[in-house]
Image 1 (cartoon, protein in one colour):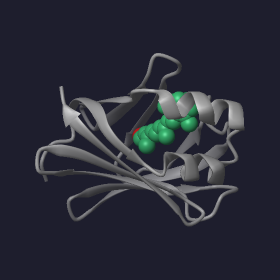
Image 2 (spheres, helix red, strand yellow):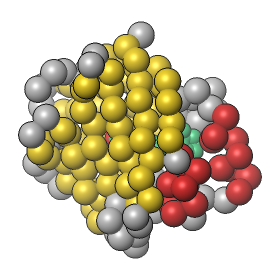
Image 3 (cartoon, helix red, strand yellow):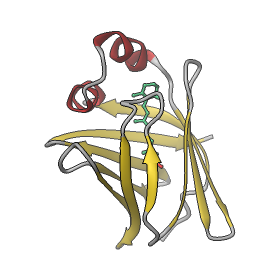
Image 4 (cartoon, helix red, strand yellow):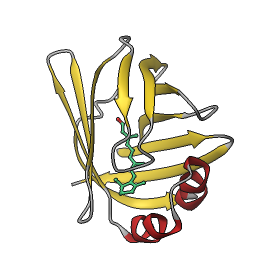
Length: 133
Ligand code: RET
């Protein structure tokens, strides 16, 4: 599949509020987070993906190898400990995040030169689109 790597600027963010409510994020943090212009910086170093979500307020970074379960701590988001597993499903890089919340995860893929990210939790879906910088 097309490479996810690069620096990406958000251009749309549908139902981020619903996703954050499903995660139990406080009204104060939700209000701040909704206004942020998020960026993604995706790198592949050897076998390891590094995905940085950055903003003027707070950053969040994950590092993982595809196919290898890892412990994720969602520091600064909902502050939960998860067991996460990232795999390729067709052209989508898909993460299943097992923990307190049901049906939690995300999928990244490229469509029309844009980076798409769906974030799932408890039946809520947030759909984000990014354009390459
Ligand atoms: C921000 C600002 C503070 C509050 C929240 C945020 C949300 C971050 C998200 C990150 C998703 C990262 C993924 C990484 C994959 O490896 C913007 C940090 C709630 C939703 C999918």
